[in-house]
Length: 300
Image (tube, rainbow, N blue to C red; front, side, top):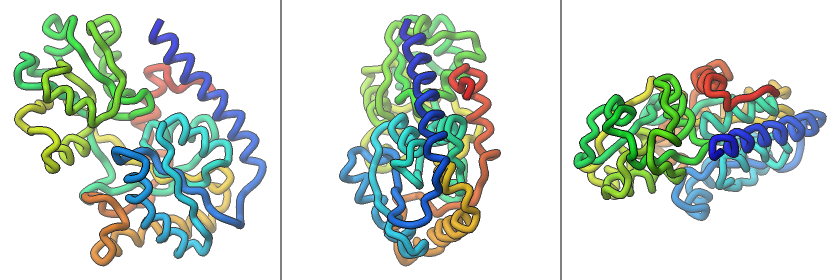
């Protein structure tokens, strides 16, 4: 029943995105402020806005148009806003981007770099007292009746990729585990390391930052599975703006300037993020394939 409700939610989102995208695609915004939506990458909205305001100012200067920044605190909300015209530009997670592209024609123009790389990894973590030493343990008899936490259902590393891995191994998490939660990445790490959860899904960037900031102990966060490389967060534009090739080229150029500018203006991006690289939709094929394989990327 829980699975049916989540599936229905995804299908409903697809319908909304398709309808919104069809309407918004009729007009290409060429003047006025650009509405820049950013996912909730920081612990709260105020910090998120403050973190990405310098990037918005940089884009406004380079594009010659005001850029209005707003944090959108759910994957669903950001995907919808990109489809219905409430957002022109978006910095969003890979799975959210794939949904927005699939249902409303949004297009990635660049991928953010983390420590010089455009890719990252999904993880499954546990604590050293769990007795779980591998994903085979987790999904075998040792893992039955345990507790497991996914991220938000719009999360790439926290939901889609681990669900795909479970599916490939013939495991329904709702049946295999005694308790399944859906929560924030930071909460997953905190609760796993405290022994309040047996295991959970996360991604390497979040784990590394939490360890470096002293929020969790590396000795209490044991990685028992790592995915193949996944594309980093996408900088995307609405379907309407994507048709303006001259604008897209200017935007890509403005984003490409961010990396070299960081030496003098480190506030342009959060720590460890090192710029942007131009990418197209094909770069996100692993995410799209996982969405199709799990049935979570339905017909348009």
